[in-house]
Length: 315
Image (cartoon, rainbow, N blue to C red; front, side, top):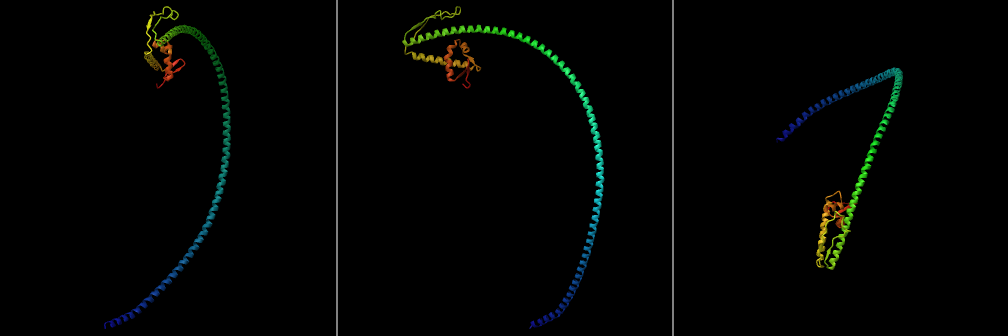
């Protein structure tokens, strides 16, 4: 069969290659041993070099330490010398500076004493001169004050005398004006009393349904001669009892109309106005406006301070 020759060839080939492999392995072993030997020798050489380098470094380090100690010792000696020399120089400079400063201070003190003495002398002279000038100024001011006081006193006395005369004239004029106003007021009161009495009679006649004739005022109620007006008898027909409510309504409407007029006048005078001034504007006596003013005060439409009536803000 074909397998047998092939197996024989393979076995022969394995046998011949074994010897070659053994030989190759022997050579490899030799090379490895040689390399191992060389490596070991190299390591010994490296160790020897390291020992030598270490010893050299130790020696260098010891020498450097010794040199450094010597350098430090030399530097310390030099520093001591320099410090000693510097201290001596500083002490000398300090002593010289102290002497110079003492000289300067002494010179400054001497100069200050001289300036102080000179300033003191100057100030004393100025003070004496100022005292003299001040005394003269005070004397002049006193003289001026006496003159001004005398002139002012004379002027004040003159003004006071003139003011007294003017005041006496004003007082006299006020007294005359007051007498006139009092006389006019008395006449107005008499006339108001007369009107009131006639009103009472009229109201009584209304109630009774009678007809009356109002006579002219008597001589006792008439104004002084020269101011009298010729009176004319007035015939008044008193309304009946059925006509009284209508008449009273008319009176009330007239009172409301009067209140509106008084309120209008007061609103035109925010700084206040007296009842007499209002009466003068209407051409009546103040007593005629009494009821209207009281009604406005009660309603809060106006306010009163002393004799003045003021409008209420917002009304």
